[in-house]
Image (cartoon, rainbow, N blue to C red; front, side):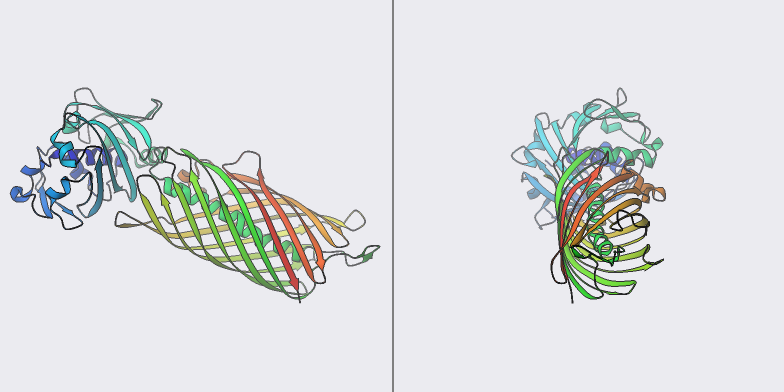
Length: 500
């Protein structure tokens, strides 16, 4: 018989993850009633009929909770499967068991069984795995479960079980190492406490992976274009030497092709990650005296594997378009530049429990000012200082379990650094060290949670430009982070440009 055990387990999974806020799939009051007051589902179904594909449950306060199958089969037939997908109060819920069928597991409630439940809670997919007799829900006050791959222990006050649990019942929540995560009752727990615990338990792993991917994209795509601007706008020594005329980009139209590959890694609250990304670009620009105007188009893909207990994997990719401008002032010593970027996005985030399909777009902008000091070393070397800022916003919709939610995210950073350039007869070598400070969390509390104190990174860049033919230049650049940072990468970039 399909009894209250399935609903008690569903309520338990949501109670662990929602705290003082309501779930997207159920109201908290309904969850407590489902988990604690229903003697069995057959006594609550309208007409006690499980032969229908849909029906309603009457809660103790008189509210009706609709339950139905998604494939048109009866509720009774759904219980004969080892796993099933149900619509409960308008949300899809996936339930599976290690027993031969759900019906068998519920009929033998005193035997050890493994259950997996996945649902949308507070707009994010939550997966709960629990092993043990279902009867423990009626008699025990301590439960060891795995939530989104993270083991936790939920302990009620002495003498309490889930059947008599309500918002005023004291409880404690512990992590895998026995550290206390939460203590109190649902009515007294703040939303910020729940957010912090949710982050540590992997509830927002999707958001963390997307933020990591966004940081890496900002460092990569803006970096390629800004390096191209630097090479076009750095003041050059126009006199000749014994080896011929020193390098400079001539006026007129210029076409360039660039690619960058990157190994990346980092940390995000409860997990570390690694992965790789690839970017290919083509651009056309025109230099006219102190002015540079151009536009770049390209494709970027990034893949990240979170090394958490569920080994989640995220992918994000898309085509982008980026116009840019620059102007040199003070006889070439001061360079101002700006970049605007738009990208179509698609991708996915997957775990062994569930997957989220992602689709949307990205907007970004970057502005910088660089001042070059007077030349030295026989007028072939110069030092510059640079400062600026960048902003990026991803508008992303994620669809999972038949529900579409917003995974939009934004990021802002300020930066400053120093550059060194040394010119030769056929090109130049250059290096820079740039410090990037994350400023989004200063005005966005949710961003502060996602960043988890990761406020900065320092990037070291080394490159060289060589004239390989008349009006044709090859640029090779390597970049990496130095020091301690939660965002790390090693990248190699190559750009071939031709001036008409």
